[in-house]
Length: 459
Image (cartoon, rainbow, N blue to C red; front, side, top):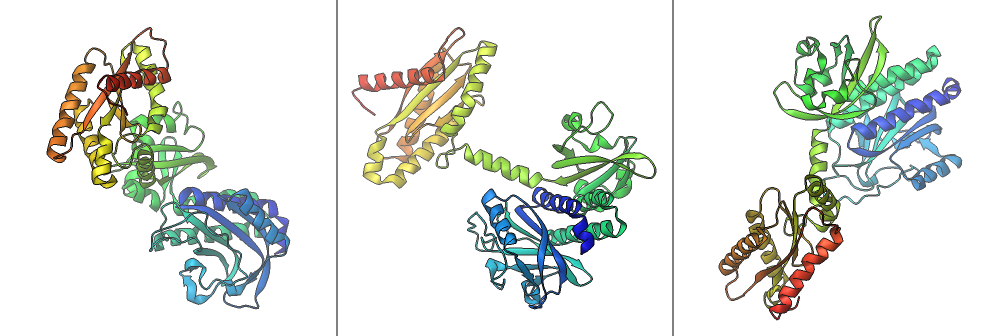
């Protein structure tokens, strides 16, 4: 282990690359890797050692301090941590920490997982570095984005990456070329869990099996591609290729077209290398289509009212300035229309809030059928709605009448014995108007108030 100690700086770089790669390329949002002073025998209590180096990704500063504190007190790792009954392949999984020795250091998840068959806050997945049947370090992962326990394929990918890290460290020390081993490890570790293309003169010179799987091409077809970037979506090609000289700098998220024509999202990175006595570029990528879809769904949910499905007030506050600037740029009118449900309180009082929720959801559905694609509506408060009507000025009264009639008809069919209607007030921005959004909203609200006051009603 003295060789390892002499190369601590390089060792730490490898460990940092490892945890950062795991957090970027797997569902896990936290990873901790530790390297031991001596190899330990799995399952043996008397086989013990200390930690000479560690790295982490995704931890808070408070969690980092806990690790540093434990290390400063001489944290001891025992082979007891790796019990055969908890072994899965070359890894160890302890559901809710069951079976994990009390001396084992574990930072519990910050998240609360509610799926009974999913990840739990005290679950522990340990992926060891193996060396001739002994363990010289480990990776522990936590906080999966999808809240699921890892499947066999994901665990095998982590194990392959850990094995490559072990090789890189060992060979680097033996050959006293840790910097070169570090670069080699980065390529190998990327290829273990991602697709890899090696590009030279616009052609694919090497492709790994994972790249074929992601892109849906046989190896020979990818090797025949020239230029290689025809697999990239046409709109995203400028992001990956800069003036025909090579991939533009930095990691990218872009779209690719599979052989079957399906569009997928890829996270892409690259670095230069020597390949067969010539300068080439290694392009690494992994499929993030499901993550992009999930994030889009989550963004959509965050911007919509869960009861009615309409956009929420937060969306309005973010988007209305853009809408107003568009109207100003093209000198077209913009109408804000405020509305609320008259006598809605009677529904809640007579039939309960559950029935009130049904009415709100039903009326929201009616509203959606009456608007143009360019119009949008926000649930502004309990029974208040705010309509954004671009390029609308003279025909506001017609829109009001159409909405009022449609809602009245729905209430007649769905609320026998109860009378609910929608009242409206509006204000229109036209070119030259100096009012801001707050003033426009206030104008629509004031008109609604005056109309209700004239009708002898209050909100």
